[in-house]
Length: 360
Image (cartoon, rainbow, N blue to C red; front, top):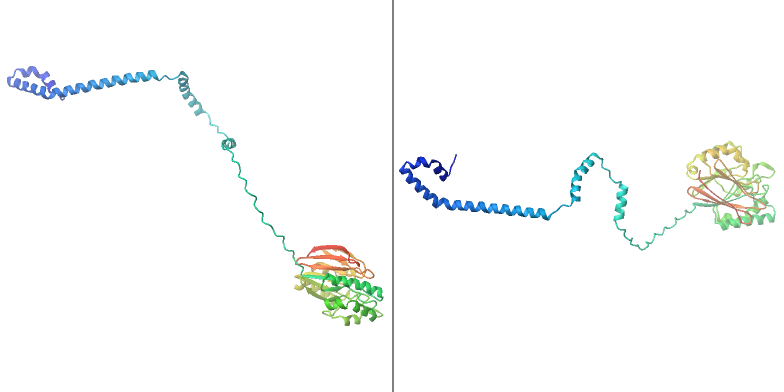
């Protein structure tokens, strides 16, 4: 244990006094202590007193603050209730407002801005689609047989209508002549001279285009007067997207050679890749070749013989019969890439029917 000089001397002074030398030393030490230790002791005492004064001041200040700050009783009660509420929340599952409620609240908080009116923008003008032009415009008529001037006038009138229509080529569905005579053929050639010189002309054999006195043989006058493809009795031609087949219903309805040729023709690319029409004189011939027409995709059929207009549809095929003497009408067909537009006119050039149908 360590002691200060004074503590050591005070405790051992009795033993030290008996020794003179020691006494002298002690006196010397006491003097030394008085010189050196006294200032330190005084400084210590002053510091201690100052610290005590600070503590007294701080204590007084704290008391003043406690007196100034008075906590209301309500706050004290709330502070007492806080622990209880914390316990309740800990034992209760928290509930949150729905997204819809938050969204509505946010919408209420967000001030609505007045929309800035934009000047009306000019809408681009859509150009109407360019209509398709027909690849071919062809005309059909029939039963013009004439052996009188009046019948020639009837024939001439419809020829003029056809010329005005701009159709080319022109197809005749039979009975060009009256009873196969040269006189009736001459009348026909006179009336149609301008038509045949400015248009391509094709015709089917009718029952009146027979040899004189022989109803089972076609007139040689007829065959010599025209130049048609194949054997001139049955043949086919292509115009634009139209493949037209001409058959002999008057003298070759049961002709096997004609039927074999028809089968090959309808199966050809010329027919399969185009809209296909078939023309003959007798409407009833359809019953003999209906399977060919249906199975090979024929789109329409044109016939004459009964001298009055008619239209029907069977198995998707449009069948037309044309009017003849004395009220000869005509039909114009406009051929497109995948459809046909038909307009039919009477002997006064008035429109009596209009049909449009798609390729089969």
